[in-house]
Length: 288
Ligand code: SAM
Image (cartoon, rainbow, N blue to C red):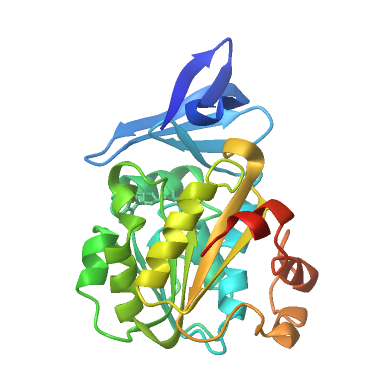
């Protein structure tokens, strides 16, 4: 569980106790704080990373570097699907992932289901650039528990589900178990893909194997974990795990990526190809 130290001598620090590590940013001032029924949300103005959002003491997003996360949580999974028309985002309250998903012209509808409207309210005020697509006619924003939403979803309703949730604590805890993955499996079409932020392999290999095992027991045929830089999270290196009902990460729309009709800061065809490779310790350590 992260614990944030209030800005002392002008620094915000998130201490990741289990990892014995911390990340700090020099703060100019605190812009916002609200205790919602679910979590404590803080927003700071930093000296070099723009605006910073923190939830329950854990860094969530900064205006300087969020492109790594939002691009890598959306483009690899969408280009790994032959025709991703109907997308569900669980979490994603800062709306950065939603913006990236809506850049894909083949996407016809995106439902975003975040438990906490206070996150989106803070994003609208302090991260307007992440919310620039919120009024896209293809987008629907809902503020309910994503776990409940999926238990009530009709069979085969979605082509892609992206779980852009918090860490497996608090409201996010129930997003990391077999029951949740079974509801995702049920809600996905036959060639559907689930993608979830799955912490960092540097600290969380045991969690990764638990998550991949739960996905397999939920019925998914193949899992692939990809990694990317994530400067403000513990270790600075993050992972997303894709779970396929059919097929695998080897079949992706390379020509569409090469000709993508939008600009990115990080993601491109070479980066996509690189996500197919696993570091040796992960090749050895991922047992599912
Ligand atoms: N996208 C951000 C980034 O750039 O790193 C970080 C993730 S986002 C802020 C995490 C979201 O998950 C939060 O908005 C939180 O409210 C949401 N969340 C946590 N548990 C949830 C649940 N059970 N159902 C729906 N949303 C949930």
